[in-house]
Length: 102
Image (cartoon, rainbow, N blue to C red; front, side):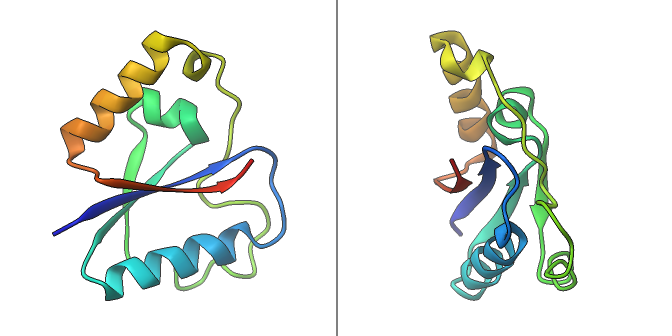
Protein backbone atom coordinates (compact mmCIF):
# COMPACT_ATOMS: atom_id res chain seq x y z
CA UNK A 1 0.00 0.00 0.00
CA UNK A 2 1.34 3.42 -0.90
CA UNK A 3 1.78 6.00 1.81
CA UNK A 4 1.59 9.74 1.17
CA UNK A 5 2.01 12.81 3.34
CA UNK A 6 0.16 16.11 3.08
CA UNK A 7 1.93 19.32 4.11
CA UNK A 8 0.57 22.86 4.25
CA UNK A 9 3.17 25.56 3.77
CA UNK A 10 3.27 29.34 3.75
CA UNK A 11 0.53 31.51 5.19
CA UNK A 12 -2.98 30.27 5.81
CA UNK A 13 -5.27 30.75 2.84
CA UNK A 14 -8.91 30.05 2.08
CA UNK A 15 -9.43 26.58 0.70
CA UNK A 16 -6.52 24.85 2.42
CA UNK A 17 -8.79 22.59 4.45
CA UNK A 18 -10.84 21.81 1.35
CA UNK A 19 -7.63 20.82 -0.43
CA UNK A 20 -6.53 18.66 2.52
CA UNK A 21 -9.91 16.94 2.55
CA UNK A 22 -9.98 16.38 -1.22
CA UNK A 23 -6.41 15.03 -1.33
CA UNK A 24 -7.06 12.76 1.65
CA UNK A 25 -10.31 11.31 0.33
CA UNK A 26 -8.91 10.83 -3.18
CA UNK A 27 -5.81 9.07 -1.88
CA UNK A 28 -7.80 6.85 0.48
CA UNK A 29 -10.13 5.88 -2.37
CA UNK A 30 -7.04 4.91 -4.40
CA UNK A 31 -5.93 2.62 -1.57
CA UNK A 32 -3.24 4.83 -0.04
CA UNK A 33 -2.47 5.47 3.59
CA UNK A 34 -2.50 9.22 4.22
CA UNK A 35 -0.54 11.20 6.79
CA UNK A 36 -0.66 14.88 7.69
CA UNK A 37 2.42 16.83 8.70
CA UNK A 38 1.76 19.28 11.52
CA UNK A 39 3.49 22.70 11.20
CA UNK A 40 4.67 22.36 7.61
CA UNK A 41 8.24 21.48 6.77
CA UNK A 42 9.33 22.04 10.37
CA UNK A 43 6.96 19.27 11.45
CA UNK A 44 8.50 17.02 8.86
CA UNK A 45 11.90 17.54 10.48
CA UNK A 46 10.62 16.99 14.02
CA UNK A 47 8.36 14.06 13.17
CA UNK A 48 5.02 15.73 13.88
CA UNK A 49 3.07 13.41 11.62
CA UNK A 50 -0.45 12.07 12.11
CA UNK A 51 -2.58 9.64 10.15
CA UNK A 52 -5.46 11.24 8.25
CA UNK A 53 -8.72 9.34 7.87
CA UNK A 54 -11.97 10.03 6.08
CA UNK A 55 -13.65 10.57 9.44
CA UNK A 56 -10.87 12.91 10.54
CA UNK A 57 -11.32 15.23 7.55
CA UNK A 58 -15.11 14.94 7.26
CA UNK A 59 -15.91 18.14 9.16
CA UNK A 60 -13.09 20.53 8.28
CA UNK A 61 -14.49 22.54 5.37
CA UNK A 62 -15.98 25.27 7.55
CA UNK A 63 -12.85 25.75 9.64
CA UNK A 64 -10.50 28.60 8.83
CA UNK A 65 -6.80 28.24 8.19
CA UNK A 66 -5.41 24.73 7.99
CA UNK A 67 -6.02 21.85 10.39
CA UNK A 68 -2.39 20.86 9.88
CA UNK A 69 -1.10 24.33 10.82
CA UNK A 70 1.81 25.92 9.07
CA UNK A 71 5.17 27.28 10.17
CA UNK A 72 8.30 28.73 8.67
CA UNK A 73 11.33 26.48 8.87
CA UNK A 74 14.81 27.92 8.73
CA UNK A 75 16.13 24.45 9.48
CA UNK A 76 14.59 23.00 6.31
CA UNK A 77 16.67 25.46 4.30
CA UNK A 78 19.81 23.68 5.48
CA UNK A 79 21.17 20.44 4.11
CA UNK A 80 21.03 18.89 7.58
CA UNK A 81 17.37 19.87 7.96
CA UNK A 82 16.42 18.38 4.61
CA UNK A 83 18.31 15.19 5.50
CA UNK A 84 16.31 14.92 8.76
CA UNK A 85 13.08 15.38 6.80
CA UNK A 86 14.10 12.76 4.23
CA UNK A 87 14.97 10.31 7.01
CA UNK A 88 11.57 10.85 8.63
CA UNK A 89 9.82 10.15 5.32
CA UNK A 90 11.97 7.08 4.71
CA UNK A 91 11.42 5.71 8.23
CA UNK A 92 7.64 5.99 7.79
CA UNK A 93 7.72 4.50 4.30
CA UNK A 94 6.16 7.60 2.77
CA UNK A 95 6.49 7.53 -1.01
CA UNK A 96 4.85 10.79 -2.02
CA UNK A 97 4.15 14.28 -0.73
CA UNK A 98 1.31 16.67 -1.49
CA UNK A 99 2.31 20.25 -0.66
CA UNK A 100 -0.52 22.76 -0.34
CA UNK A 101 0.48 26.42 -0.27
CA UNK A 102 3.71 28.28 -0.91
